[in-house]
Image (cartoon, rainbow, N blue to C red; front, side):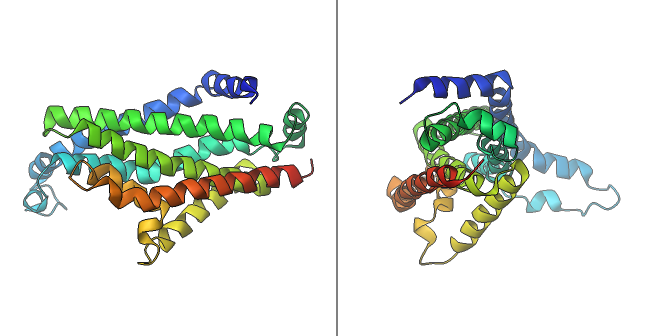
Length: 256
């Protein structure tokens, strides 16, 4: 393994502040989501009497629980966070949108695997680290405002969710080898993940779908067993390896 290629990718993400932006994004939503869950009933109660605001809304709100606070973070990460990760991954992997950029990188590496793997691994690890930092921020804020959450189960849930983010980066790698440019790569990657969400609604697919891993973040601290998410974890690992193999093959077959 040529570690210089990985170091170069880390420097690129650091120099462009991509890593810092990813961290700040997840930590912000991790810290802010429990605050919103804690304050929302009071905010709705304070707004009663304002024209256009239905009275009694605060009474309809569920009780602010630690699991609900963590679930709020998951909801934000599941949509906005995944989109941000796809943008970061596409920025690293969509090399063929410009002939000059594609030629610049391709002539400096020994093969397609050296071209793809560092640009997959570094954004994937950054996404896992950023999401986990956000989960810890959500755990700490929940502890201060609402109640206790088991830290070990919270971190285990973050690990399962991080595995899905790694899978999402692998999807982006596969798409980038065929779509080429940044916007087509992001667009087709989003479409592929949306299709996966829809397939995950089928009973025969549900427990094996990578999208099931997102539920682990709130379910494990609430007492769900880890074994509930092992089938999805196994299929996600296998799928990630297959997507990477296809991505390397696609980059190798693409002409500059």
